[in-house]
Image (cartoon, rainbow, N blue to C red; front, side, top):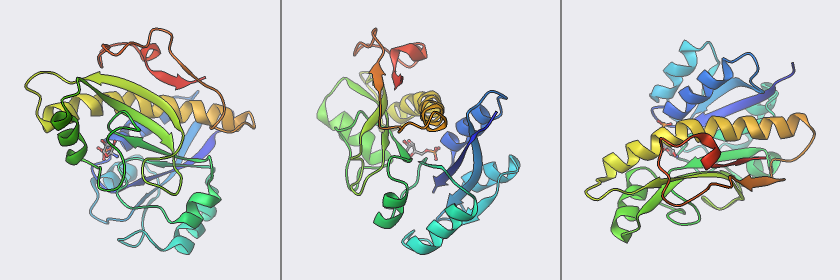
Length: 224
Ligand code: GRF
């Protein structure tokens, strides 16, 4: 079975990368993690890549060497790029080269609580400050603006009374670990079929705002 060659870009711990590596260990997985790329040589995610015997590559710290990044992605024959806790803006030329072939996972329900400066703890602090009772995780296509591209998959997560940024982040992250592999696999199926991941996506019919992270995946919005 042919697999889609995926590059994962990371800056931090790489727990989402681990979820992808674990999913790709299944013999029927449509994705193959062909390389992991980090702008930080001390990123824990690189250790996870090495442990999985996946090439672990380091690029410039500000991530703005577009030609270098493109050359690296081409060298590894990458078909799909996944940003999993990657904290730098991807240069426009790289976004253009992977139009509709680059995904990001964001720890809130976009289009709310996204944009420049909205990353990590700040996202959850903003959610709590807003008083909303609903957060979640989003997988979306990457375009030239932060957290702006077409939404591909979302999973709602309740905000509990007394939540802190840490407790909410942990609840959302647990959902990301299921949503991101499902979305990547769905996109890879579409790529293998010659379609674009920006194509058909559906909401699970039982999607309701009160579902929690313990609900099965068909409560999420997932690729068709
Ligand atoms: C995740 O919450 C992701 O949504 C955000 O950064 C975090 C990365 O966590 N973009 P990890 O490095 O995958 O553990």
